[in-house]
Image (cartoon, rainbow, N blue to C red):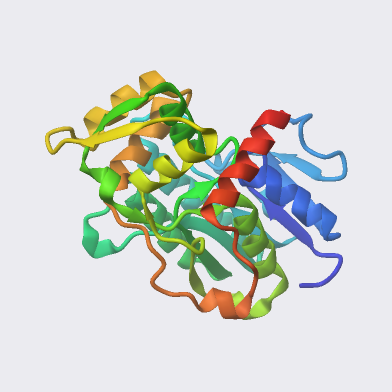
Length: 301
């Protein structure tokens, strides 16, 4: 992209978006942020444009003059019911407006999960949004991430509060599901790397950390680092939906977020395609070091 081109970040105040905005500014990019209302937490050097992807009339001002846009929007932070429809509508409205504005590229952060594996509502919605964006005339880069670990992220906060508050956990069988957790800092490096490398345009990549772990092992690693004793007892009759209720009681993560995430834990999320490691080589952060970084960031807040 041209040096003076504008990069749009949607979801700019979120877990991923806020970190991405800072990384783009550090690399000298001109950054525009979609906001519903002016936000004082964003750096003063970004351009803030008010809009709402569920209100089509507000979107042209957001995308006009944009070369590349990051699509980081999801609706789980709102009410639990109907988040799939809100995500579908937002992606469709964005695609229409971006086509009219002749946006050149879109980079989307979605989720891993195989279609044949009977995806949860959350993972199926992420896949649907990817397909809607791919229908646009712009070139779409899709990063399919496993569990993203970092301070303030829903997955990390659920693990942290469960381990720190429950010395004994009775869990459903999803604790044996395998996943490939990735540090949020590595996700940001991939997102920025895709912007810089045109070879990633129009491609779909799986991104994950260097280790494959079960959710049980993820919690046990956290407990060891924190010096906690925890016993995890899987039982076959406790469904992910039922377990989401006690997670809601134990952790500060909103039920509208925790319930879809936990229902998705039945799906194995492992990278099947590692091509991005050749295109954008980097030393991926190990899970234990990722936890330590997240803990350090949490304690510094």
